[in-house]
Length: 296
Image (tube, rainbow, N blue to C red; front, side, top):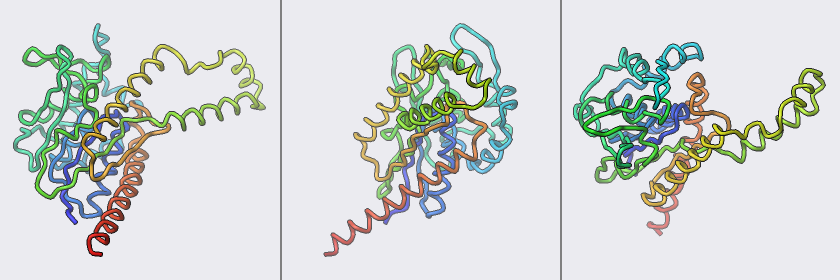
């Protein structure tokens, strides 16, 4: 059974920290990552792994709380973005020096989207952090990267899990880690339970608050657009999975963690490890059954 992996990491904001746990679980089962492709948070984690600094990044993430997140957000309130996105990259570069992608020990590809044309833009050479910065340009939040007449935004817009962009080697297995989706059904159940608890709360202040607040407060312009965007990205990732048929898919749909929960890194990493463990077990069991059929 081959142990070489062509690894693909999806977009997903802070949920992409689960990629770290999944990578650690793959390595603990002696899988060797031979190439990586990723977009958005997947490009960030994948690029840092390719540079050999994933452990340092994980330790750094432990220091991130809400206060530190605000310090790393260089607000600009421009017409097309809320933050420049420079400060976070500079902070990471303090312990992950920039390098040319072609000099990395394993092949790496980051994916971005050209807002001008709608075309996919691939980074297989040049500055690692310029590629990552372009790939993580969350529309309306981070400032787009302008380069060669293009306006580059988040790669997840066009290819949230770029399985068709990873370098393949003979005999390797294609592994995708997808954190682009939310478990909205589970979220709905949780929300309903919370509302029922508030209705029957013995606290007078909570009862007054419940009466003052309108029902279905979770429905507003922001949540509507956010969920529509999330559903579209999820459908794109499912279509890519159907098209490429990965040998192993670690599908991680979050119930409670969102795009900006960077202060929950260890919890997200633990989810990634658990889900990867299950996927590895299923893959290896399927291989055993296939080998048995061949030998009978």
